[in-house]
Structures are given as structure tokens and as C-alpha cells.
Amino acid sequence: MCTADVEITEITAGYQGNRVLHEVTATLPGGRVTALMGPNGSGKSTLLAVLGGIVAPIAGSVSGTGGSRPALVVQQQAIPATLPISVRETVTMGRWAHRGLWRRITRIDRAIVADCLARMDIADLAERRLDTLSGGQRQRVLLARALAQQSGLLLLDEPCTGLDAAARAAIGAAIREAGDAGVTVVHATHDRADVRDADHCVLLRDGRVIEQGEPRIVLAAAA
Image (cartoon, rainbow, N blue to C red):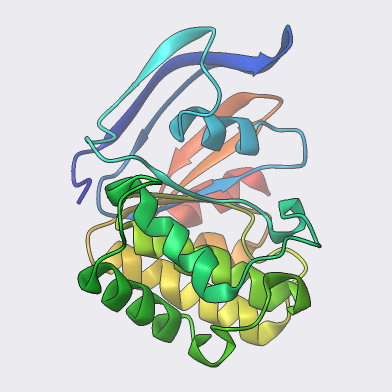
């Protein structure tokens, strides 16, 4: 697991010349749950993309992410509504980080997939097509896929946005369980309850870090 702290040092990043993050520096505790807080446009998603290796920074560095590929959970709205793939096939994609596209999935891989389906309480949906599920069910599937990757760094972009109470509770419990198991979890959120449940919080505004530290302190600063 990724037990070392993740050190973000003076990161500047953006898209097509539009800078979103401006000299962001933060420490994300290893093996703990960090909430990224801030209004829309504050840079939360861009920072997750930098941590996930999707966006290359213009300047600055990130260290302590470990040797494994980070597992990224996007918002379920980002998944094509007509994607013709089953729930089990989607979660199995999480094992490709270990096997690659062309190597056969092993019995151990199948057992890990089954465990992740059970953990997210979607085993009964395993043969359903992804495009037939509700938003909350799809988001549980995406998190199960990330858990199947068994990465030491789990990144989530507002995983509970627009979901019902049951889905939010299931995802929140899975995030807490991952952090307790030593995974470094970083999730973007607007929900103050999610922030209070985290171990650490980073407050972003206009692409800059305004405050970081214990959630209660950061929430007070945000207020």
C-alpha cells in the first residue's frame, strides 16, 4: 500500500494553455483519507488528474505515490450511457493494471472481482449491462473496479454527487474501509459531512491551496 505521504510541490497545471492550478503545495497523509474541498472551478478535478498521471503538470512535482498505478474513479456521468458491457466485465477491467489487455484473467483475479462486487453490494447485478443501471449503481460499479485494481492510491472525483442516501452510504463506507486498510484515499467533495469523515482536508479556491489540515480546522476556515 501507499503508506508514504504524497508530497505535492508547487504544481502548476491546466489544459490547452489555460492554467487551473497555480503553484499548489500540499501534503496528503499516506494510508489516510484526504478530502479535497472547494467550489466548482477551484481545481479539484485537475489536481486529481495530476495525481492520477492523466494531466502532466506545467511545473512542480508529485512524490510518494508509490510504484503502482493510481486507481481513479470518475463521476458516473462521465461514462457513456450506452456502453455495452456487463457489470462483471467492468469490474474485471480493474485487474488489467496487473495482467494487461492480452493476458488471461486468473482464478485469483476472478476471486478479487467477486470480492469487490460483494463489498459494494452489487454481486446480484454482475450480469447486468452497465447502461441499464441507475446512477448510484453505476458509481458503485466504478468504485468496485477501482478497488479491484488494488492500488495503494485511490482517487475519486465527487463520487457521491447526485446519488441517493443508500448509494452515498455504501460509497462512504468503502472509502473509510480503504483508508483503514492503509490505502491513501483522495476524494473531491462538496459535502461537509464527507469532509468531517475524512482524516485530512485540503481547501482549494481559484486553483490555490487556502488551508489544509484537520477537517474541523479547514471547515472553520471555509466558513
